[in-house]
Amino acid sequence: MKLKIRRYRWSDLDTILALHQVSLAEVGLFPGDGVYYDDDFPRIQEIYLACGGDFLVGELGGRVVAMGGLKPIDSATVELCRLRVHPEFQRRGHGSTMLMKLESRAVELGFRTLRGDTTLRQEAALALYERHGWREISRTRVADLVVVYLEKRLVPAAML
Image 1 (cartoon, rainbow, N blue to C red):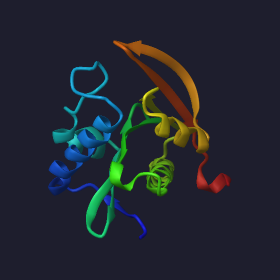
Image 2: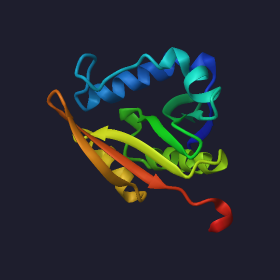
Image 3: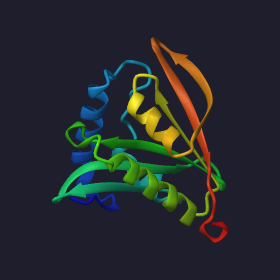
Image 4: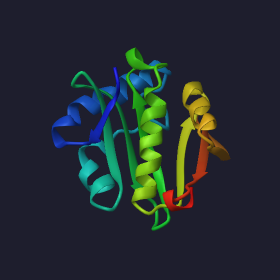
């Protein structure tokens, strides 16, 4: 079944918050660990959509199983946030599909650079970013976790 990607709607809030929680729990990340936060979820309209970014969800058979957001940093750079695929639907290409859609959406919105972060615990995410041409720009330790910061330069469609 093909992942159907669409823009976030307010009615998705409880579903994507649960998706976030189950996805992070799957790799041993929990509230209070120093990197886990979820205060942006009730403010998606403000943080992602109203300021020139976007937030997308991926559905299979009407069920939201994937998500990801684009949060502008400045006029040229956008942060990729909340890239998640429900654990029951991982390893089927849905992460790649969401990532490619978010990258192309960032180009459409006029951004030239994508930034993001993950932890060393999220090995599948690190491998996904590497496969898609992202490069590590730095690392930092937060409590007992290592956070990896990544970046990808975007190429406008007209230059391909």
